[in-house]
Image 1 (cartoon, protein in one colour):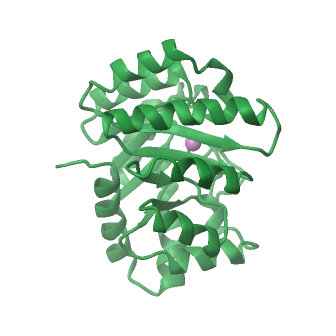
Image 2 (cartoon, rainbow, N blue to C red):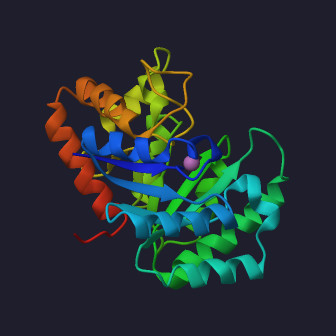
Amino acid sequence: MYFDSHAHLGEDCFAQDFVNIVEKMRAADVTGMMEIGCDGPSSHHAVELAHQYDWIWAAVGSHPDDAEQVDEARIGEYRALCKDPRVKAIGEIGLDYHYEDPPRDVQQRAFRMQMKLAQELSLPVVIHEREAHEDGLRIVSDFPDVTGVFHCFSGSWEIAKEYLKLGYFISFAGPVTFKKAPKLQEAAVNVPLDRILIETDSPYLAPEPVRGRRNEPTNVRYVAEKIAALREIPLEAFAQITMQNALNAYCIKE
Ligand code: NI
């Protein structure tokens, strides 16, 4: 039993063989998944998907790439979507300074507006933070009653500790399996067992040994195998722990 805490099955690249992907997930014992919105349309799609399968839940929100589209109307749209009990989080939201597009101030504004919505609705958030650690930490610290998940964690153990202090879960994706990832692997070994999640971020960032291909949720097993081996715990126990953690992080009651 694996829970993929972050995937985007609504992406065009899954349109042709979507049913096949879902069947493979069931066969590979992926029994839980969060479908994550990146903008208006993908958020609506996530909710639809969560109604089709009772083991898929939805997050709605705008990725920093889409920050320019976040205005009061969009927030109102998300607020309405969140009335649906299949919606379990606001995300993915956050900051990405890798490319300075959209500009930092626009990203920060969109991030704050969506953190505020999460606070208002008492929902967890799914945060994307890339090369924006200082500003990211400052903004989440301004919302002390909000917690959630730092997804596709890419920082060091030092950075993970700061997010953990604020009550967040840390989610690891394909990069933790890469050969040259000692810092990330150090973090994956040290995050407390009740605060660690696994994900694929499908269709991006496929783990070893399928690196470079279209990623899909069945590959969450490779992420689990890597971390279980690093931590020297049985795979099955680690899968079960991360399943329970995902249910806790997203307040899913089964
Ligand atoms: Ni994502």
